[in-house]
Amino acid sequence: MKDKELLKLLIKNGWELKRVQGSHHVLRKKTDKGEQIEVIAVHGKDMPPGLLNVILKKTGLK
Image: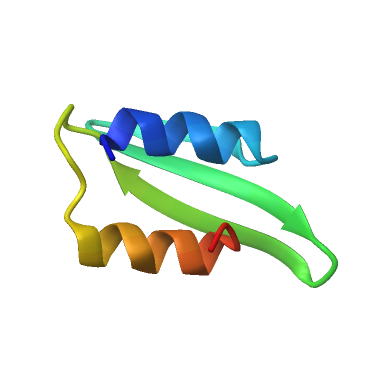
């Protein structure tokens, strides 16, 4: 999966783009327990499978 596709998937599932600093996109999602933040580096390349799985698990998509 490309990093841009992951970014679109997270935004589609309720994540909000908080800010962009260089190639790092900071996403935020409000939950019952407060706020969850995830940082995605977008370089226009395929995500390494291990990193992709970790991000999907942390964001609740897997």
